[in-house]
Length: 260
Image 1: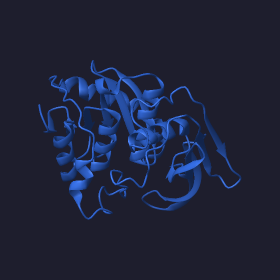
Image 2: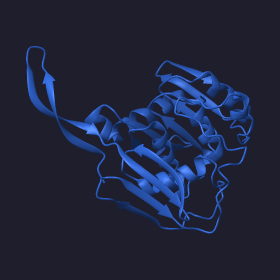
Image 3: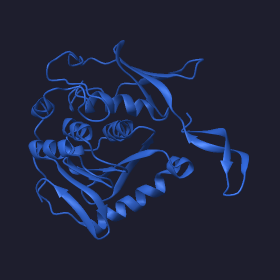
């Protein structure tokens, strides 16, 4: 399935405008279903869609982290209009999406909720990781992740998320036009491969918002490391849940939110 698409463009080269083409990040409608129920309709890059569905079910709290679904097959289909669908059937039932503990927010982090405390108070608490951090190895992990961001190198417009173990070995990298989707994909991939996410670092190629902290807490991730900034609500959620965030990671500087 395509991650990029060649698109005709006009390019200004500093002196003239010439007809050319460019690689753009593929963005398609993706419909996720579980036991014939609609889970989500979202825009994303149509690659690793099975991992996207699995990760979305866990990261959005629709199924608990220990749900017995890893051995189930995911059916991925493309229709004539270029939209994609992923469906899975398994025994565990979805948590009722109308339940008061499930709050759906927009991509900015919390725009749909009048009471921001609710966004935090219903998140799972996790046991803190008290290990010290090796910032040199974290920077090396990001350098290695960059080498796997092939769609980003081609387009300049793709997000990436990675998973490492606690020994700073980079295990998986996933890309998507949407940063939330990239996280869902790498979580889904890790679960399929039997990775214990409580013993991992989640790497982000961009910023860390509240929504990413929520996904991490629901999937058991204790450490988030981002190249970009951390939002105020993300910091508050991290301190509440026990997650540690390292943001603005650089070779000689970093911002730590939570315990250290």
